[in-house]
Image (cartoon, helix red, strand yellow):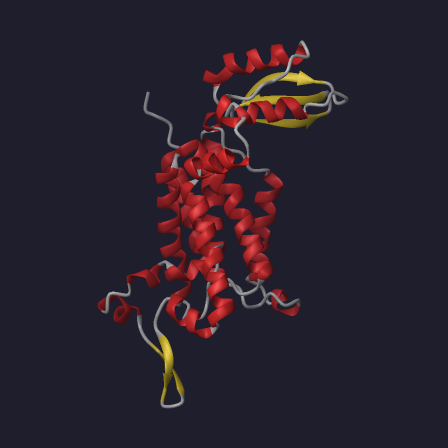
Amino acid sequence: MYRILLIPHDIDTRELRQALWAHRIGHRFTNEEEGQVLWLADPRQQGAVEELLGRWQRGEALTPPPQAQAGTSLDWQRVLRHLPVTVLTLVLSLIVFGAQALWGDMALIWMTIVPVGISGGALAVGTLADSMASGQVWRLISPIFLHFGWMHLIFNMMWLWYFGRQIELLNGPLRMFILVIVAGVASNLAQYATGSVFFGGMSGVDYALLGYVWLMMRRAPQSGFFVPQMLVVFMLLWMVFTMTGFAGLIGFGNVANAAHLGGLLVGLALGWYHSRKPAI
């Protein structure tokens, strides 16, 4: 990130912030002891920033580009155009959650990593090899769309939206698609390797997105990625906490810890690869 301007604490910057986002200028504001600091992600946009700053300082209206003035309908079109993978992943999670509410276990057994059913009055569980041999390859990824309760769904979608937007806007939909698929499969396989079958959730993917964004921010600061350091610490501490016996005492014992760790490692690996500095 590149420091552009220091603004006194008592100056309202909301209009400027809205105009910067409307013009698709990657930036962030930080509150420092001496005032509000504006940071720019891409130095190639410095001219556009200075032009906006000049108009803002002169008190002129910061009219957004034409496509941002057409109303809510066009705004959603822009969201779908720029964030197709994030939106599709979120929508599929909501659809599956609704299917679980309507059809209960019938929806669940179609989404688990291996087939499950009742045979002779007992629970029958298939194997991953059987699933692949019968063409049920969707089971490698489908558990990430399962969520067991509103809070589980809301928190996972919140992190998906927070990290997914950055990745698609800065690296494009293909990068986000690869992250979701690779992290989803890897986190599901990691959890299955522990002997678990009934698991689900987007959290393994979320941890992959966290690892990717954090490494891109650290190793390629010019890329524009940003995640608060305290958020990284919180999510890592939470992952460690749920691996302990204390988590079960407050109702968080049934957590897909292996999926979290597997997803994080995938995100770190891809973040390391894509943040490599070009050879001189």
